[in-house]
Image 1 (tube, rainbow, N blue to C red):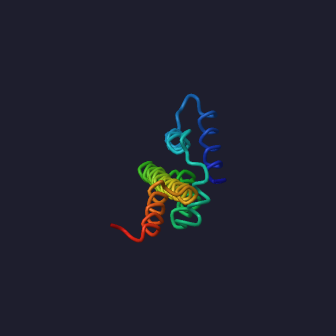
Image 2 (cartoon, rainbow, N blue to C red):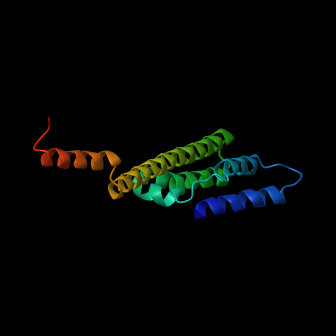
Image 3 (cartoon, rainbow, N blue to C red):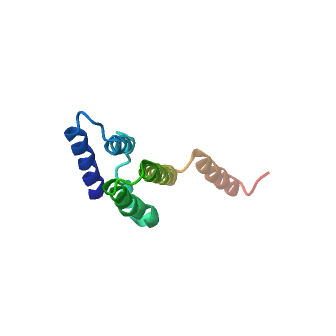
Length: 144
């Protein structure tokens, strides 16, 4: 996450120091960071990705930020820089989707477990009625 911060700082600094000339790298970086840092950002996603999808975690926290930093520093062709940013945003969206699926599955399991626990705590009236009918039939010498 620290690399995102460094890249974001550089984008902000570039935007502040160059008022008369725009820096397309800084502008595009700010736009990409805006796409990633939405209010609906799923808290806990990166630590979960580290365990559940380590290749995606490494791409998001190391490989892609390093590539973006390198391309920006070298003033690589803008299309290459843009492609790296698109891969970063795409990987981030993929991570968010995977994490939301995981969290939704966890909620479904918890709801199922909760319903099961509730049904075990209070037996249904059908079971009580069945037990009563069985006792009555045994008392009467069997079913007629």
